[in-house]
Length: 499
Image (cartoon, rainbow, N blue to C red; front, side, top):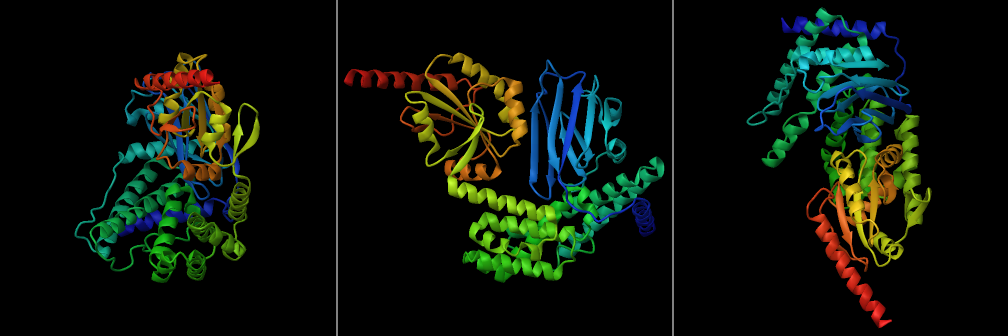
């Protein structure tokens, strides 16, 4: 019976694809706007976030502080292809958007208290792909968010894959029942089918990890391409497909190749990744999916050795057909070479021009703010805890107004437009510096901090006296700064007397 139902679903999918005019799928960057308004919002909800994975940038997180006086929000960002995104604001909503799209969302009174089954009565969409987004919500309500986590213990590779396959069949049966009752658009049917397949494909890594921690060898072929195809370009509409492509490419062509791993251990990265790319091109079907796998391996090479990356970069057109992915590699190389030559660049909001850090950033800051205590806030616009500290940071600045304290904000790995808007909308004073992704990586390698947010206290001698200083919202930070101010004043008086 199950086989008959699955064949029926496959026939529906085939009809969906044929009804929808197909064109060669390619990546093309375009601006996306997601904006909206809250008609009622609890005080405990302070941020709204859009999170997604894409083929070019991997994880992207964009967070906005909700101004309870304005109760509106707006995100502007780039997408490279039609895909799903997750909007987080007390509840999780899946959106479907494409480059050039705009979407307006109204959260009605009672949204935060409503049961998920009544969600569509409390949220309204206006713009692109609204029908598909609403159908995804209906589908999640219909299937009652049943999730499956396969057990690894005591399972052979074959048994583990069989468990995954059985669960995929069950999900497809539920999907077919939903289709019969709701008659959704082909776009939804396509997305839902891909989501089922590749969301479950990402459990393969769990099994590999289980084997690793239990010192067991993998037997058989774990990344079964019959069950989880890797030449399914249209599946990129589901972000989990891109994750699967990387897991597959890494496992088969890097971790699963003893010669490649030996070269990596010997730090012969050029040979390692050239072998990897050559094998991938030889064994995989050409198309966007293969291009994405190759691109991600180029990025992995970049992380290991820029010299090896630059060497392989010369032959990139032999490996990647996608114009957009080649442009992204070129951009990465150009930025890195500029930074390597000039130092770490950053944008200064005070001067509205780009400056360069040469040597120790803290020494430069101390020279600029001679004789003062410096409180450094390392943050990112997509970091919810970072942005939640902004009101407290404003209060901290007010507390030490007209005293010898400077507040410095280093924004890393963020969207520049969101950075500018956050500073403007929050009226956050102090000295602000923006570092793009490549610049952030270089700066982080110098600072060696653990995560976001991180706070530092620097004394007048450009010494970091606390590399894990309390947050602005803490009770301790005022006392910490007062102690440094008192010490600074004593030093200033002593130097004045000696002079």
